[in-house]
Figure 1 (cartoon, rainbow, N blue to C red):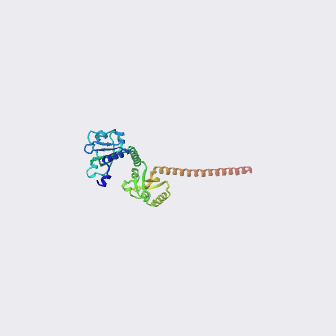
Figure 2 (figure 1 turned 90 degrees about the vertical axis):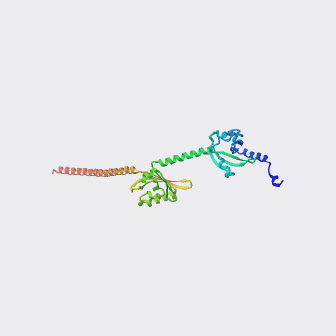
Figure 3 (figure 1 turned 135 degrees about the vertical axis):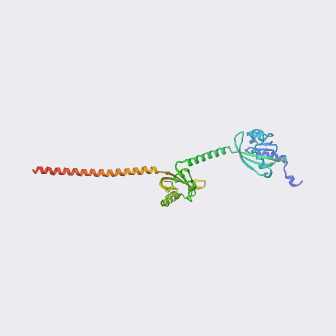
Length: 300
């Protein structure tokens, strides 16, 4: 007997060691025959969930099905894929828990190739993932359906990377005409440098913007807007989020109020001037009366 033969463990001992390792793992593990679908082994973690299923059909024990599962991965781990692990996610039909399954063909102590699967419970992860997706969808809908125009621009390049429907309406442009353009194109040419400087200062100081400005539409119309902008992070990217509110009606009201204030001021000035003249006239009348009294006293 060679040295290598002496160093090889007895198959029964290898088998017990293998099962001991499987039983020490907290995740459910089972081994089944790929031809008969008979469960050859189940560790303690799996038995706590499905009971002692050794000797039963895997599809009946784990999925309560009468025939092999349509989603069985045997074709992914045998044949040319023998020895390669296949990882997939699935929701169990019986307990409704989600698992990340790690499947692989391994050699059983009796020499045959069998199916090995370890299932990691990811139900809580899936719940969190679902909640995050729902929140993401809510944010997307809020972004798209916002009444105010919203623009996202790259803080480094000033390039517009995203906008909502209200932005298209405000500028009278399609998204394809907005995204990919510099944010300065939103403003009239003669004021482009002013707004460009304002945004650069905003980025350097990492300060928020809340100011009135003007934008130019596709048809060349100048519209007054109020801009609130802030810098935020999307992943590793620094983004300027600008919210543009059309204040055309507000400006009309302001201009009308200014006009009325001016009229009142002018009327007030006229009234004061008139009052002053009335005072002067009264004083002149009193002076003339006084002169007239003097003349009467002299008998003239």
